[in-house]
Image (cartoon, rainbow, N blue to C red; front, side, top):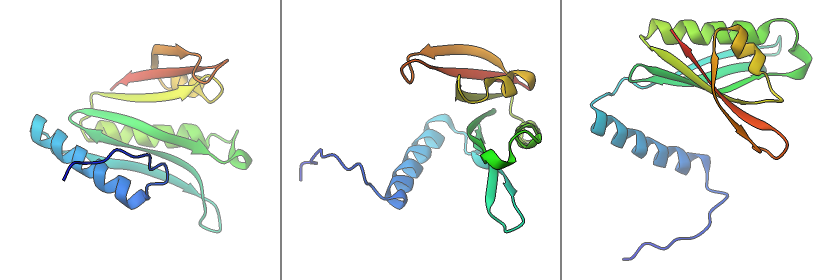
Length: 139
């Protein structure tokens, strides 16, 4: 049977996760590194709802912070800094040599820079009128 290409913009999370795991399996096989693990720190309110998160992974001596967010009602109290510090500490404990993060100019690039991250790339026009900023921290 010949595979058919079609748009599936509503692919289920479960199916997308399964495909991503196949990609990770290929990466592990091709590099001989199978030390990939999630790094997730959550900030919860009194009702147990997530109101902040620092999430990503470590693999092959590198860590990437892929999701960093604090609910607007909890901003300005140092929660973002605490989440970032916890993520960096865990990555270092796992032996990561550096951490990557991508953010936008309208988010919190200053938070990362204050924590010792350095800008290594800025992609202007992403989205239009703004920049996507890639930062790295050596640990």
